[in-house]
Amino acid sequence: MENNKINPHGTVVYVSTEGVRGITGMAPKATVPEDPEGLSKVMLGTFIPPKGKKKWDFVEQYNQVKMMGTLWISSFARKNPNLKVFSVSPGMTSGTKFVETTKDSQLQCMPNIVKCVGCCGVSHGIDIGSDRYTRLANHPEQFVSGVFYASAGGGASGPMSDQTPKHSYLSNQGMQDVVYQTIDTAFTKAKGVQGGQPLPEQATMSPVVQVSN
Image 1 (cartoon, rainbow, N blue to C red):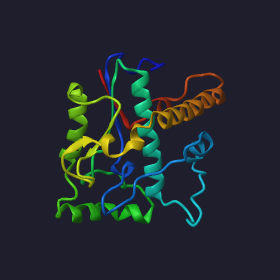
Image 2: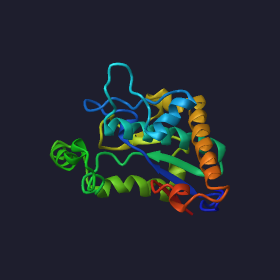
Image 3: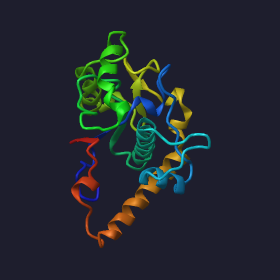
Image 4: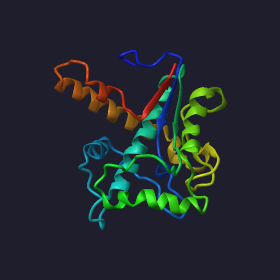
């Protein structure tokens, strides 16, 4: 916004994940701390797992960060009612290069897993996953700004729907604003480290936020 990279009446689409609300029979919903200190630790990768867990695996960390982004987007939408702002999961999509360079053993198995579950209708192709983005970007008037869209049935594929009615924590405005403020504070501090200069392009414009004019 500060660098005029978003049209004042444009559309913002944040790429989230099904893991934010969990996947029926496959993964529990993401959880994040409710205090700024804990949220900051998630951002820095220093968050300590709950008692009894030796460590977070990559998928849990990924879902935590996506949850924070999804809540931030909802707060951002309320602060900018002139914009159309959405979070959306592409669903379990085959054909992407998401894990092409990873060294994580769990993620290295994902492409084959996605292909296998696709035979059972649990995943879909890149054409369907990308269609979710383009529908929101090209027809924002058909959707509700500030909410999270994902697979309707609680799985990882199928029709897309607003997840807020089924998952009240997604509409918790207090939590949304805590996340927003925590991230805003982190960026403000980062600017201080930069001597008050604008942050590098890759820091100010996340690659997972798509903007349409």
